[in-house]
Image 1: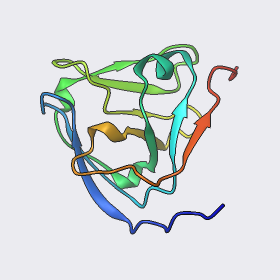
Image 2: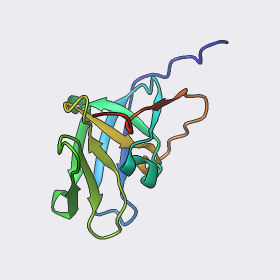
Image 3: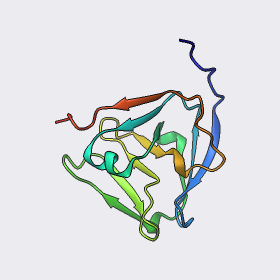
Image 4: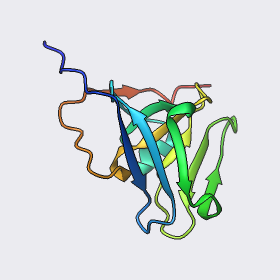
Length: 123
């Protein structure tokens, strides 16, 4: 099996559906992930992991609602107006964000490997 050519690192801008929350990430998309934990399975997001230094909230901090559960380590953010999940702070790597790639403008995930992560079994 051949690995896809690495993508160059690039800055992408994203937003929630209504545009109240806008953010930017810089990444080369080494892989995308899914998660089977109770919240990720329900929101059905496809995510890319980026370090907090590669994430910038451009606008809408006041429009974000935060949800935590279980260990209260991961921080899931949603737009208060349209309800879209744009990103979350990761539980296992709290200095990283999981970015919902469907919120990124002009991004095509074709050819990027997808890895299923196991969140359901985490204690």
